[in-house]
Structure formats: structure tokens, C-alpha cells
Amino acid sequence: MEVIIADDHELATLVADAIERLLHRESAPVLGLATGSSPLSVYDELTRRHEDNGLSFAGVRGFMLDEYVGLPASHPQCYRNVIDAEFVSRVDFEDGAVQGPNGMAGDLTAASAEYDRAIAEAGGIDLQILGIGTDGHIAFNEPGSSLASRTRVKTLAHQTRMDNARFFDDNVDQVPQHCLTQGLGTIMEARHLMLIATGGHKAEAVHQMVEGPISSMWPATVLQMHPHATVLVDDAAASRLQLGDYYRQTYASKLDRNRL
Image (cartoon, rainbow, N blue to C red; front, side):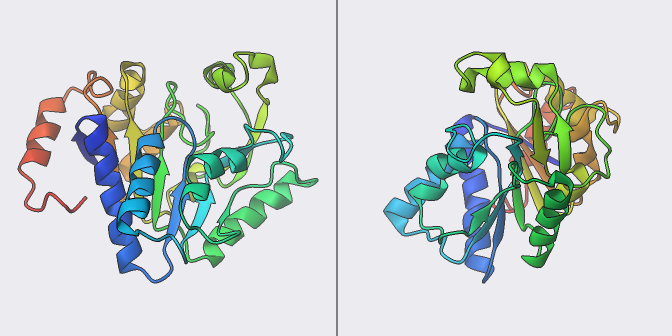
């Protein structure tokens, strides 16, 4: 695991650089896309490069991490609509190139298995963008999730629903109780994981993820087992890291600063 501590602008630039290199390197790249506040600056930077420099997403496939169960496709907080507004509609993805789990499926178990198959048939995810919850969840894998889990239905923790209530008029009762989410095992199959966390409210989760024991109580700790995971945090999110100075030293002395 590589830990990079920098300001939000540099973090977004580093992730965008990695994605741009991937798009130039691969003929049919596959991106894993996350919603939430963490990746917004990355999507803004990629959109800027598309508009100013012609960076193209034609031929790129995208897979979302999760989707609420039972939220109609017309609802503004349906994650298909959120990712379209935040990123997909702002660049030149081809129609249907980005897909997510079907939270309105009649058979959610079958829909989950179908989603994992779709990812595999696309060749797997080359680069997965991730955020982290205050309780250490990634995607909607709440504390207690199996570290080998696949895409499946999960019940959202009360804290997660409270955190997401701001998107539902600050009314936690409007936040769905269930979701379809990529499992930790599914996420770990991506070839490169890039997790972004900013703000002091994420500091304990970042500390546990990077320096704590691997445990289902802090699901993001599974990233310690990935051969190519990059954790990008600002000073506030890094404030609980015991080895923060070492991570800064390591990044400052990299032999190749462009290679994450």
C-alpha cells in the first residue's frame, strides 16, 4: 500500500494523471467509478482535461460500486443519475458504457451475480476509484462484511444512512435501508485501487485502514492485502497516522514521482 499525503488539488491531479495514462495505454480500459464527495475533484479535473486537452473517454467502460435498492430510476439520488451528473454526461462516454447494479431488479441475488459476470466479461476493472466511510466501509460494505464477499444486497448501517441524509433533504427516513454493492472480494480483483479521503472526520478510518489490523470491523483494511493500492489523503485525514512523516518522506524521495 502506498500512502500519499497532499492537498486536495494535488490528490485529484495524481488520480487524474493515473487515469489519463491508463486511457492512453489500454485499447479498451475499464474504470471503476465511485459516488460521494471524495472523487468529485477528480471528476472535475478529468472534465477539464476533456474540455481543454481533448482527453477522450470513447471506448472506455465504467462500472459503479453500488446502487440503492428500490430507488426509482427517476430519483435524483439514484446513483446512475448521480454519476451521470457528476461525470459521465460531462465527457464523451458512449451510450451504455457505464453501468451499475440493478437496484430495482425483481431477483436481487440474480442481479448481483449478473453484475459480477459483466465486470469479468469486460476484462475486469483496470483502475477503481474508492472513498471511505467514517466507520471504515468501502462501497457499501459495512463493518462485519466478509473480506471475500461478492456483489450482494447489504443493509445500510444507521451511521451510513445518517451520513447520506444530507442528500435526502436531511431526512434519514428517506434514505433507503438496502443497497446492492460490489463486495470486498469483487473490489479486490481490480488491478489498481485508488482511495481518496479528505477531512478530519475520516482520520480514524484512515488510521485503521492503513495501520490497523486487518479486520471485518474496519472493512477498508482489506486494502492492505492488495498488490497495487494507493491511498491519497490530505493532512486532516492523515492526522491520526503514526507513520505520517515516513509516508511523506517516502513519497518525497520516490525514484519516479509519476509512477503510483
